[in-house]
Length: 115
Length: 191
Ligand SMILES: Nc1nc2c(ncn2[C@@H]2O[C@H](COP(=O)(O)OP(=O)(O)O)[C@@H](O)[C@H]2O)c(=O)[nH]1
Ligand SMILES: [Mg+2]
Image (cartoon, helix red, strand yellow):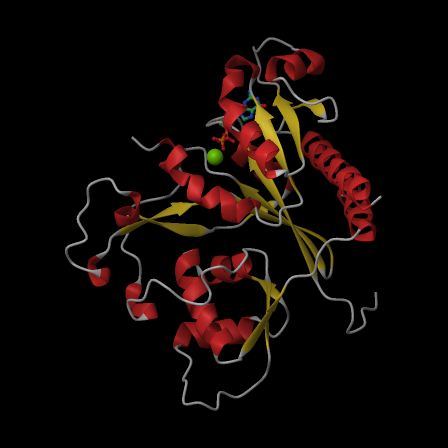
């Protein structure tokens, strides 16, 4: 019935346990290629990062895209967005997105040619 | 190489679109390291007759695998490739995929040219720069790029090229053509 699901996709239940059964979070609108970086701050408001969030914090000591975080954790994007949203709300990560300039695009063209 | 603190890492997003079986996954695999990535489809949001009687806790979702590849140009400059899912019920993902995208490659198969109409319509409407790459399957009629342009009713400034996405060199040429096109669009919009 579903053509596009030929690739390793199967019905599963969203791992709600990881995100307390929530479906909405401030992370919902995160762009897939937004870059996540830990701020190095210590949570001061009683928020305790869960094990997956600790893994994320360890991963993003250097800037890492949202998609790479999801891929490395092997968790679906929606779950990762909620986890990131919490970390952002508690100022443990910052999320940025640098836009492409003419110079960058020329660099990409040359870089691709050299592959 | 030295990168001062002002050199923010830059990530670019390129979409690979086109009908089912046209070669999207093959293209991503030919030019980049495919990485596993899944997203959720919330079935109860799709209005297909599943009553949400159990509330949030019991909401069933399906995860779907996405085509996702990464090309590192240099430290701090990465190009991400995302295949766009081919079915109508995944339209909700197209908006988020195309948000902020550098551009899109629409793959076409001349034996089923109409399969790529929805992709072309979508990118035209959104104003996302795109090129059309005709994947030359064995045994398919060799079409000239110009015939395809006419058949698809493309604007004169949309590049059309022939390719074989199984070949890395060919996949590379396709991506270079897209970034060159995006650069042209960017430059034109700034002048
Ligand atoms: N002969 C030939 N086969 C191809 C070509 N591109 C893709 N294929 C094959 O067509 C099938 C579908 O390709 P795939 O990349 O999975 O299409 P997708 O549905 O767009 O991701 C695969 O079995 C590929 O090996 C091509 O250029 N020539
Ligand atoms: Mg595929």
